[in-house]
Image 1 (cartoon, rainbow, N blue to C red):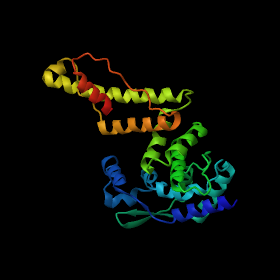
Image 2 (tube, helix red, strand yellow):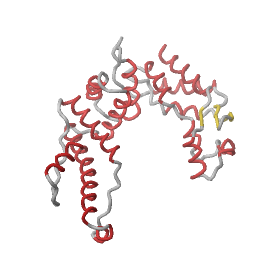
Image 3 (cartoon, rainbow, N blue to C red):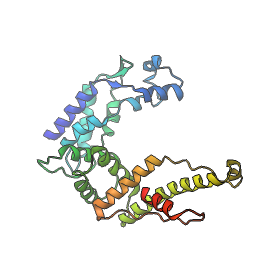
Image 4 (cartoon, rainbow, N blue to C red):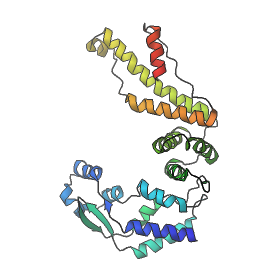
Length: 278
């Protein structure tokens, strides 16, 4: 019960502090809803999705709250009690719009905020007295946000291996990517390898198009129905690195890579350099 009281106290404190309508909210209001920034406060109570973009738990608050959430999660009846107590205590939610404070007078939105915390979900345990405590907390935040019906033991194994060697962003991104690739697969290594190969194939297609462009004009390539792949090479490379990092943590070897079916003449040194890059 002490944990529940502490969680309720922290949620109440957060709801009493202003939520900031940042530039992304302003952009959504102007581009999608046709609402200028200066009149944003007049439209917060409308059913237009604005308040759902503003009153959300950020990563900092999740990290503050996470150590108090038991590994087995919080029972639904206890969450309902927290919601009831919070709604009784909160009369309005302050919103910071360009430095001006607007009051959102609908405490029922507290329930939406609390539901976004996913308090009922099971999570991995945090080792007591662990010097890497903050990284374990961040890992739990990522698992709470992204894991659905994943094997917690497998996630714990991966986290235990990564916390000591990866920075926080790599740890967080690894969990996010892992949960987006792996669902109920029994062969996790194959699932990760297949995804890596798909990413490498995207890079290969981009490289292949570049080589064709050196030989043919764009008009000819368009007549051949060949177009430049829309690939963010840096982002794709980062995901490939994450997959190999996860596979090393779980299986002790990198994921299997893509081997291109070469239909054009490319010298062996160039091919070797490309494959080493990806």
